[in-house]
Image 1 (cartoon, rainbow, N blue to C red):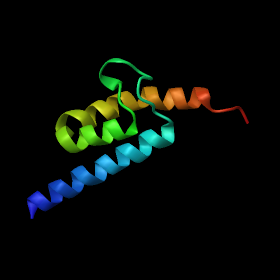
Image 2: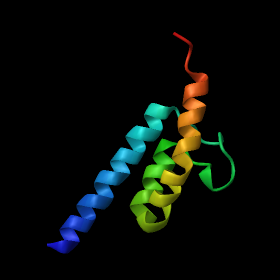
Image 3: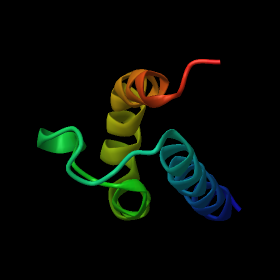
Length: 75
């Protein structure tokens, strides 16, 4: 039961990471360093090593949000 819940949480958050990174326009090579992956890279990393990659994505997300806001055309 607990194992199924853990798998569900990892799969769900990995899908969210992919969708969120895609929505924010994250592209491979934009950031440099550990934050080098595109949406698929982040999601795949979460699936393989969730305990490390998911917190890294959450730490990098404010930078991705500000980059997306800078690229958004003014209204």
